[in-house]
Length: 111
Length: 118
Image 1 (cartoon, rainbow over the protein chains, first blue to last red):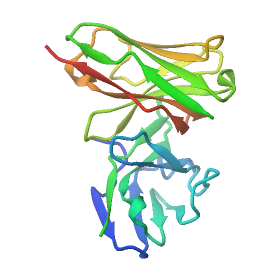
Image 2: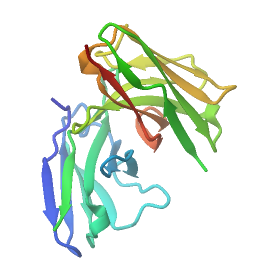
Image 3: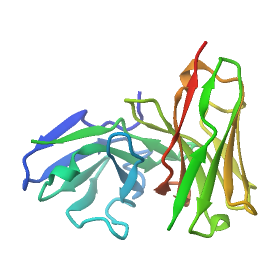
Image 4: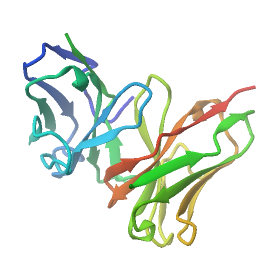
């Protein structure tokens, strides 16, 4: 069982916006502004999309944005494109000794 | 080009050992935390271990503590994961990742598959 809870799947049509949630506790998501999001296409390595809740690394499209409210973080993808179809994972800093936990992943389908 | 390339995966029987390597290029290797993250095919990502820039600090997930050892050779720009007493549940794709500190993984290798089975 993953420490952070994500919906198993979400879907949207091209051009639409979707939001993926990532729910934790006050010991991880809610306690720190250190949530990251990773995109993973089938058979490929994960790619960092968002870090520290809402920061985009250089080269990541501004269609990707992150936010947080309480113990839940969210990844929003606007102007959905076929290439966005992938698995998305959140992670958070945690006060435990391991310091990082992942969500179970969400499969995004572009209809 | 910033790149991480893993090697050393393969098939091993329960109780056996493997050593994974991760060759880094395109960045100042000794300036970054480095991590290992694994993924059972079709399942989610699980953090395994991390090592500080100079190798002085290492941390492990409870599931591998006492069996796996992370190390690095900054002269060779290479990260290692020595895996002993392997179990069926260690079967996964193992990724090395560059850390922005201890909590963000900004560059990932392509992964190497480890299969533990009798």
